Length: 95
Image (tube, rainbow, N blue to C red; front, side, top):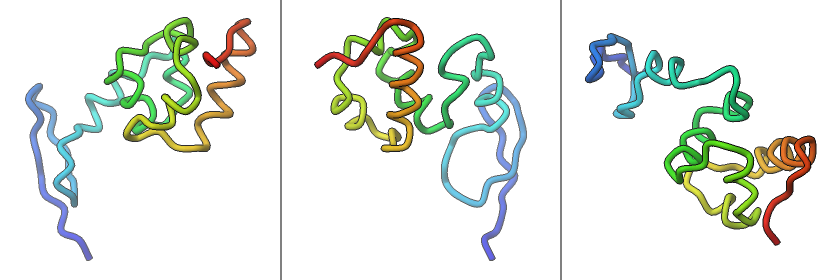
């Protein structure tokens, strides 16, 4: 059984984690905008896009599928979701 340690993030939120991962679940929840397409993604995929500076579908459409898949935290199951969102908004991945 892993030992859960009480941690405090730089914003002062306290939370328990059993790993060395520094991500605060409270801060992650605050980041998740309900109005953004990013809110439909899991945290690793959302962070991968945010770290790349991709915050809109228009920005996403400037990348190829392979470039997005190469981002750390992006999984193959996320690509169909992104394709659907792009198509629904008249956009697509760059070829």
